[in-house]
Length: 442
Image: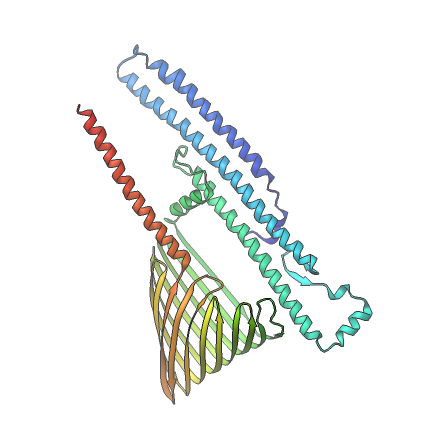
């Protein structure tokens, strides 16, 4: 279960350091025991006075015992190192959450026990000032801005809490990797958080995991206005009348194989308009739609190779125009359609780089064309694509998409580097064995 805001802010991390010190002492003690055992048992019995099968069996057994002492030392010192690093990293991230909350409160935003921020600046005004403010024509705009900023504080705090949770889960995997080694101690325990967590992920990939979730909302009505695009933000007007919105997701993984699917259905009406002219660039967008939309998508992956297929149906009307030029997005397009349309899309990905295509069939008049590239804020994936089509009565559209996932590309490059390194190590080990074999002949 993921850590909550309350879990993170109330956690006492000092026991991690205490436990680290105890594991350090344990590792040092195992080192002493190994040295004493080798000196007073192995060497003492190997003085040449005892010969035969019993002696050979004893030596084999004592060698195994000495190896276990050495493995116990390695494991204990690795755990001590992991706990110390965990304390350092979690303390830093916990402080980041608390600092963020302090900054929000300094700007008149109250943060509750769940990490949600609410603007309380208006309540600090006198009754006369509040009355005057309520009659100010710009009051609704101020309220909308305060609500938007409160949501941004809430999202920022939630992101900081997730960072703590991700490291906490990494620590759990790292500790599991350090102590999980058959029936004995782990002679290969990693003392670094990243390496140990990766080792556990590799081990746990052999297990089958299934996750699923369903989310349903509606009916819902909303309207927000933000008309002051300062500090790199866009001004916006949003209105929606949602009848229903249902999303179901399921995923399964077994080793390097991963399967996932999503079904999404929406009915209602939405209209949005965004504009901005600031240090980030220029943006203008307006869209409106009414009707019903349903999407089914499936994905399959095996290691660095994957593919997807998607089908979508729409019945209603939509219109939109957009143009944006920032460092993370350059897009331009327009669309207008009324009727029914069906969409199929498919694609494949190798090493974080994917290519796909889209085909649509239209029943109803309309036209659409767009082109551009942008970075998905949630996933960090860059997308380049375009689509064009038209229909007097019956027609359609075609499009393409190229995606680049920097995280997967980096991982693929790392896997290649590891493979090359392993190959060199194998050659080096083979050369060393050959050298020993040759040396034994002379």
